[in-house]
Amino acid sequence: MWYGLGFAMPVFIAVLLGVVEGLTEYLPVSSTGHLELAGHMLGLPDDAATSSFEIVIQLGAILAVVVHYRALLAERTAGLFRRDPAAIRLLLALAIAFAPAALVGLLFRKAIKAHLFKPLPIAAALIVGGVLMIVVERLRARRGTVGEDGLERVTPRRALAIGLGQCFSLWPGSSRSMCTIVAGQLSGLSTATAAEFSFLLALPTLGAATIFEGYKARHVLFANGGGLNLAVGLVVSFLVAWAVIASFLRYLRARGLEPFGWYRIVIGVVALWVLAS
Image (cartoon, rainbow, N blue to C red; front, top):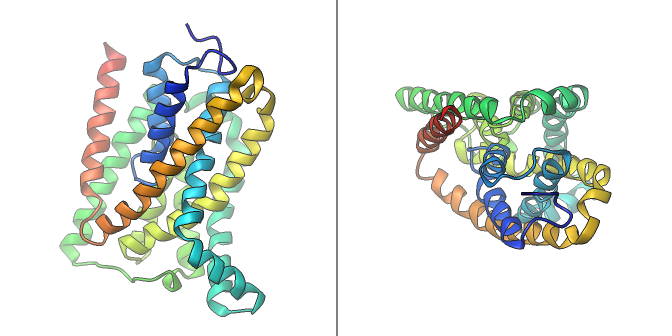
């Protein structure tokens, strides 16, 4: 029986959750959905402490983006002081894309946690998102749509479209990565550019969620040696996510998202079958 994260979680469980977070945060398969389903299968308590732990270890994935894009981030940050147009445009695009989900999340956070952080809604979201990805990929292939490449192509209008798409990721299982990449595709961006912007958008989006949840649940997370589990989860998620980012971008430049759509459908169906039985 699990009595709480503060003293009952073995380190190997923290490692496992870190691997799941790192593998799934930037792939369009839903890290929250996988973490919730993994926790359900492992028998972790469905409480605020578990939920906060799963959110706070996202910090590892955030740091992976910072390290992977360290040259770009340093260049754009320096460009802001020089009032470089490219740096200002990227910052403006990220602010526009961040705002809608931040507002919706603040307004409906409690309702979302109460009704959607459960295996059945997550499984449904996995399936719906998988179908959407397959449909979008096939329509783009039929029309020969490639999309515009390069972060400079992320206009305020496209940033707003991606931001509105990110609102749907508040439904656990839908995937923040999937929602933002597909929205970017539909706005006219190439899949790789939509993914790169999605990774950068993770910095303010996941950063805000991590800081908020970490501060709110700090006493529970660090109680009775829980800080060790948190540190392990963070390090593991960082290392795995860093490897995933580079590999996923290489994959997207040669292939599309359809295989991930089929994966989501299979996982969703299996989850429904397990719940039913």
